[in-house]
Length: 301
Image 1 (tube, rainbow, N blue to C red):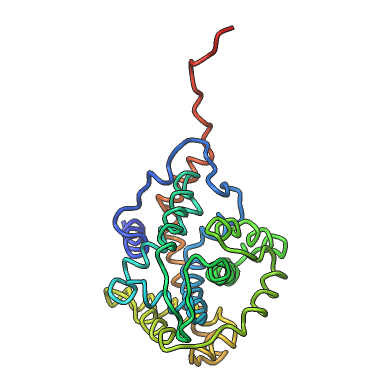
Image 2 (cartoon, helix red, strand yellow; image 1 turned 45 degrees about the vertical axis):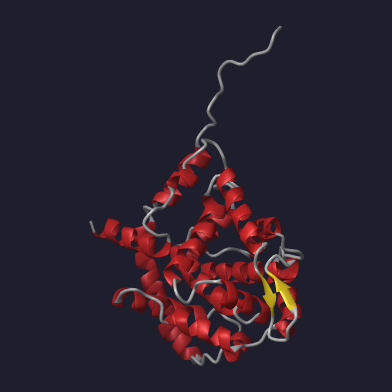
């Protein structure tokens, strides 16, 4: 069937061949970090919004010179971009939809890896990946872009203002568990944070290289076309100052009248295909199930 074939292709591209459903389907009754009724599940369950938002987040994150330096020196995104995508998608899906134990294990793994990431920035100043302020930037840029992607592509399912605040407050838990300080938990806090951090942001050769690699990503012609459509739409989610810093010039009319409709069309196909997502089905069944009743083990009366 076409729908199942598309679903397998999307999962293979984003998550890899093995979906590791054991992270999502047990134990019965475990809500995970957020629960099936959370706004995080709603936002992160929209394939097009997440992919476009994810590409926008990578572009925005690249404008922090220290964060980009750390990625350039310690990541294999140049030699294994597919593996990098799989690991990033797996972390997001596990912390969003996985069991409590799986989500906590994923966060612990990232914290362990961050502990080894050290270096010096372009000015010779030392940096470390587990710096709370640096972690706040990476998390906040990602959350802001995921939310923006959802709002653009969710149609009538768009969130109201209070729900947007709820999303930021809920997803802040991941940043905090990773060790971030000062994570915004509302739209007002997000606006203040981006205003404050903007003076630290700038383009760099590594950032421009990363964006070029991102926009050309794909193992097949069909993948490359899909990625180009999604990254063009992602550019439209970025603030104007971020587009200027990255040297990306797409006029308003192109972004709104060409890029966004094309991405919506591709997104509609993805939503149609991913409606059967085995990860989402497994996680929902786990979270909605009644916990198993333990029998025996009573004490002396």
